[in-house]
Image 1 (spheres, rainbow, N blue to C red):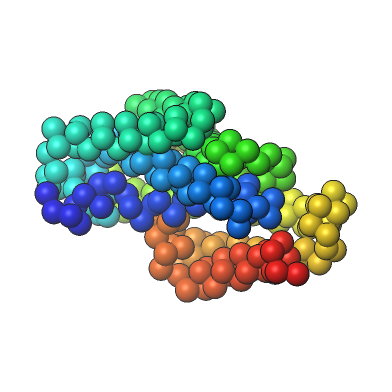
Image 2: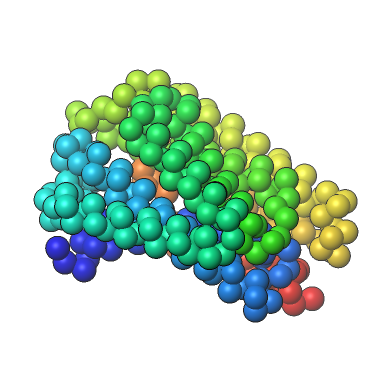
Length: 290
């Protein structure tokens, strides 16, 4: 087992998803407070460790099927680079470390991490085979990240953040299933959940969720409670980055077929990175620099 195999098994690149734990404090304009920043970063580390344990479990269970997949066959367990007893030790260490750190923060964070692990265990063994339920649970996972960040920092999570996090996660989940469906059509392993999908449905569902997300975001931008809390009526400027980013993601998915892995799309697409940085920068200016 090499260090690269270890990082791949822990899904190190997927830790970017856990940055969602920072969102409650960021939007409350409190991320620059030392105690809040410390708690948010500790929650990020805790959730990253717990999620790595979930990824190891998933790879362990899916290893036989992954060997027949053109991309997943390169995962450490699928190609035999990491043995089962080694994976078990890593799973135990990652999960125990994450739970211990979550408990150190507060029992609510621990409960959320435990709920995330339980849901994903059910997902791995059963629920990922049920269409619609599978992508809904992906959205729930992102939502739990946000709630963990709120619990760790003591910042209330707004209903706007809950709704838009779930909608965005649905788009990512649908894009992932679409990529898997295309791979399956080329003669590779056809996951049971994919029997409940086809390309017209996935394309229509992605467009529908994208439309609802944009409308919800515009409602958020013009909401009186939000403009009053932020002290600005120019929040709608940030909508440019959201709309352009969603359109780019749809282009990657529907035109180029490159989004079986949403994380990889973000880490390797300069346009998406630019839109994300622009959005963060615009909000940072509104919340912290004016």
